[in-house]
Length: 128
Image 1 (tube, rainbow, N blue to C red):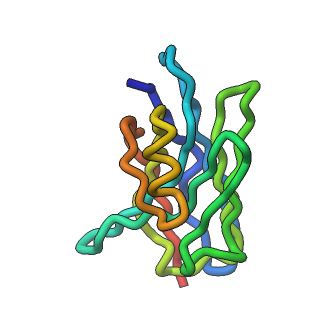
Image 2 (cartoon, one colour; image 1 turned 90 degrees about the vertical axis):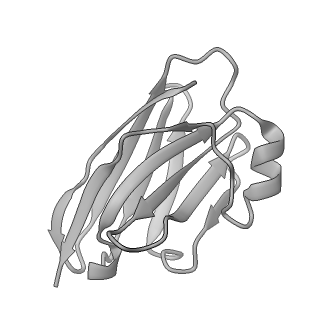
């Protein structure tokens, strides 16, 4: 399993920005795709963005145009730049990774990848 450690969460006012980071380590099989999930209390978990090894990205409608997912393969780090934040973006954000290319192909576009590794999460709170 891949070890994933998120950072960069915090509290901001609506309209502000945050950049989440996720450091990946401890794996031998190469990672094929990575993504960010979020879950707010009492709400369903939502995959907000993913990216594959070719750099193809997918975004949830709720964040498209405001969030940008990127990766630095040299540092094994995944990022999520979040701009124009809204109170409804408040949630625990989780980084995830998958080493199975078929999981990435089958689930990437619909933001439904069955990831095999998860981080512990980082809290994002947006106040109005």
